[in-house]
Length: 625
Image 1 (cartoon, helix red, strand yellow):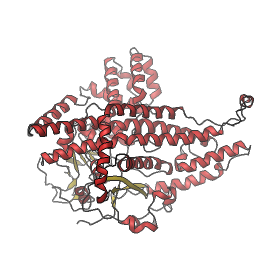
Image 2 (cartoon, rainbow, N blue to C red):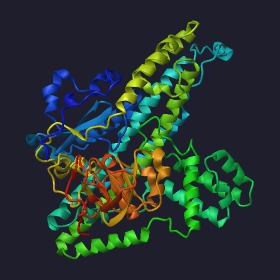
Image 3 (cartoon, rainbow, N blue to C red):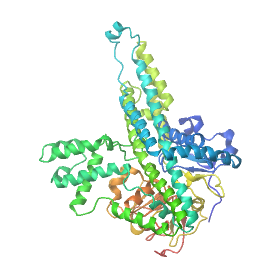
Image 4 (cartoon, one colour):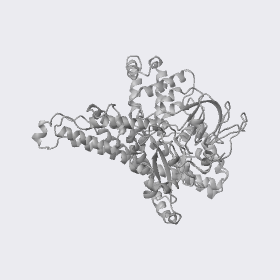
C-alpha cells in the first residue's frame, strides 16, 4: 500500500530520554512552532549521505558550513538560473534539507549573469584550479600552526622587559576564533569548483539525453569518468606499499598491525625495512590525512593518528598479493570501455552535433575529477587538521578540570567553547582558585550525552512532509539521488521489484549475486569478507581498500554523482544507490542479486521485505538479467 506523504516533523515520536533535545542545537537549526505551517508545507529529505549519525552539539559546524557555502555559490556567486541554495534543519539529531527554487519570473534575468560567471571559470579552468590548490593548502598550513598550550603560572620576565603588556591568554582566544574562521574559509573554497563540476556534467548530460533519448544515465557517466583521480591516491599508495613489501619479502613483519608502533619498529630492524619505511614516510604526507569516516564528525579516525588502520589495509593487500589476486583497479579496462562508449554514440551524430558533443563532453571530463578530488583536500585533509586541533583544545581544558572525558568539548556548541575559554582565562588571570567551568560543565555534559545517546536509538525518516509532484533541482537529483521516481519508491508507489526487494538508482552497471554484509559505520569494515555485497546507509570515499574485496554496493541514499556511485564505477563494481532503506531492510548473510544496470536488489533467500522502497511479490520470482 502506498502513502501520499511522509510524516510531519511534529508527528515523529521523541525517543525516551531525549526530551528537550532541541536545546542542544542553535535556535536557527530546529523547526519553529511559529513557522509550523510554512515549514510543514515544504518537502525535506534527510541527508544521511553526509551525516548518517546524530550530531553532538559542536559537530553541527560541518553541516552549517557545508550547506551554507554550497548555497552561496548557487544563489550569490554563480547565479544558477533554476537553483538557489538549500534550507536545512536538524530534527531529532539528524540533518534535513529542502532545496530552494528560483521563482519562475527571476530565471531569465539570471541567465546572462550565470553565463558570464561560469564562462569565466571554464575559460580559465587550469589557472583558477591552481589558485584553488594554493589557497586551500595555505589555509591548512595556517591551521597546523595554531596551538592551545596550558597557560603559564606567571608572565615571563622577558615580556615585562619588552613592555609586551599582554598575558598570553589572548593567543588562546585568537587561535580558537582563527581555527573556526579557517575551517569556514576552506568550506567556502570547497564549493568554488564543485558546483561547476556538476554544471559541466549536467550540461553534457542534458545534451546527451536530447540527442540520444534512450541513453542510460550510466553511459553518460562512463564517458567522463576520471580513472586517475586524487581521491584514489591514498588507497593506491597502500597498494604500492604492499607490492613493495612483497618484493622485499617483508610479509612476516605484518602479522600484528594492530600494534602500529611495534610493526614499524620491527620493520626498521629487518633487511629491506629501511627502504620500505622511507617509502611509507613519503606516502604519509599528505595522503594519510584521510579518515575512515567522512570528516564531519569529531570521532572520525584519521590514518595519520591511527596508523594501525593503513597498516592493516596494507597487510590485507599483502595477503591478497600472496594469494595471486589482482589488487589494482582495472584502469585499462575502464578506459577502453569509456572510449568504446564515446565512439559508439559519437558515430550516431552529424558533423555539427559531433563538434558540440566533443566540446561538452570534453568540458565535463575536465571538470568531473574535481567532484571527487576536492573531498581529499577539504573533508579529509582540512577537517583532519581541524579535528586534531579541537581535540588538543579539548584535552587542555580536560586537564584543567572542565570535563570528565578528554573529547567532551564536542558536547558544547562552538560559541559555548569560547565562553568556556573566557571562563578559563578569567579565573587564571585574576588568580582565582579555579574557574567556574569544572563545577558547571561535567554535569551538563552528562545530561547532554544521555540525550544524544537516546536520539541514536531511532533511525531518521528518509523524508518529511509531502513531496512535490516533480523534483527538478539538479543537485538534489545528481548528488543525493532524490528524484521523483525514488521518492515514489520510498512511499511504496513506484514500480515493483520482482521477487520482492528494493529499487534504487542504477548507479554502476552489472549484475552479481552474493551474501550481504550490512555495515552501519567504518568501525565494522574489518567484518567485510571477500566476495560479499556491501550494504550501507552510505559509503565513504576512504573505504577504497574494501572495494577490491566486494562484489557490489547497495546504499540507502545517493545519486549518480554520489561518492558510492563514482567509486563503484571506477572500481568496475555494480551499484544500486538511493534505495531508502537497504541498510535496515537487509540483514547480513542474506543472498542478494544486485542489478546495477536496472537499479534493483532482490533478496533471494528471505520472505519479501517491507519498508520504504520495498515491494512484496511471491517469493522466488527473479528479474531478467
